[in-house]
Length: 242
Figure 1 (spheres, rainbow, N blue to C red):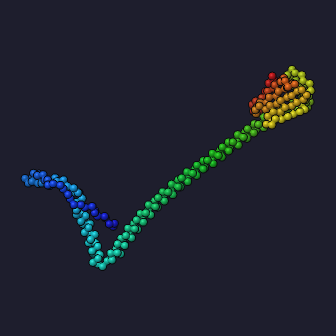
Figure 2: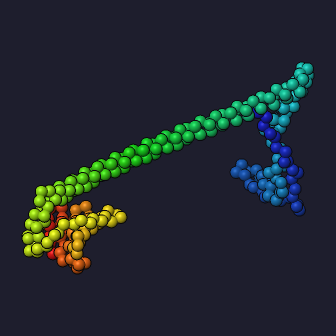
Figure 3: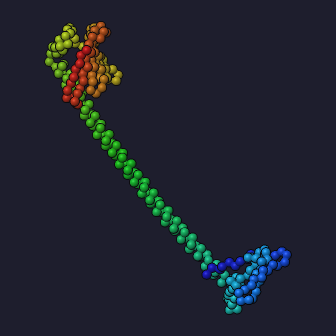
């Protein structure tokens, strides 16, 4: 059992002047006197039975050990070793508790990080998948538009080139002799094709994925403008000549 520290702050009681008492008449006809003197250190001057018993018990224990030939050094050494072990045990319990809580918090934090990583990987996979799908759709649409445009150009240029061109010119109400380009130039960005022959020039501009504009110049003067529009995903072609 750990030693209970005894009080060491006892002081002598002090008062000033004469002591004062108040007479009290009791019910049985006797009288009593109540001490109303103002004291200093009154609470600290009382030496109670509890403190006296503790001191006596301690003295009795020490004196009994001495009379029985007990080595007090060994007894005190055992006492302090026991106290030291109690302290170590309490310390170990605190450290074990802190370690357990730390490990638990770390596991929770690690699990949270793993969840975030999994969610991030899932989001990246979904973004990549959606991007690939959109790119595939876009590429297929562009390929279909290009194939349709190329087929149209190929149809126009197949067979009698001069006859096909002549038919187009007659449809527009315009007669152009020798409309056969022999000088073709592509712009750096590939969006414009310029075809020249003598004093005539055709400029083809790829405005967007669905719109192509062709302009006919004679002596560098704009004569005609044809706008070609691919509709319904390239299934229909609309041509407007101005």
